[in-house]
Image (tube, rainbow over all chains, first blue to last red; front, side, top):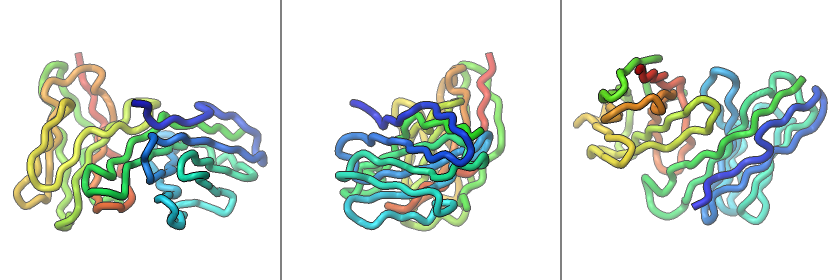
Length: 118
Length: 109
């Protein structure tokens, strides 16, 4: 079936502009995660949505970052007043939660959005 | 912080088995061992996971020691397309995935 999709695949913006990144999770997956990966680095957790629960925003690096998930499906990550240090690949993942354990919450990742802030 | 320790890099000859080790000495009883890999410029790809029994799927085998303090991911016949960074992750149900630096596997012709 269709996997996690993200758009755009690449985004180049100027410092100070706002950007919106979109994630379409796998149909039926109740959990959605955002990560970012700077060049040559590991994945950094940003935010986690689970059903109708309040999102876990503990990984957001500053108040310029926000995310929402409408209708329990599509999510948008918004970065306001972008800075050069925001340049990274932004990855979205979804998992089937909440039923079961172990494999039920295996995360499946999208291809990412490469953000470049000039 | 990642709960796992992996060698930073490994080489493997094409067609041979690639054995990637992972130490997770502080793993608790309800935590699973997951393996993902990331091929250059792509999102991480799920490979396999396990709790205490050895597991096998179409991609790989996962061998977990009896004390669960370490595990090995085995790619039985490595190909050039298996060149990637391999991440070993320990997590409990519903917890966040914490990705460490992983092991960069280079499959050599």
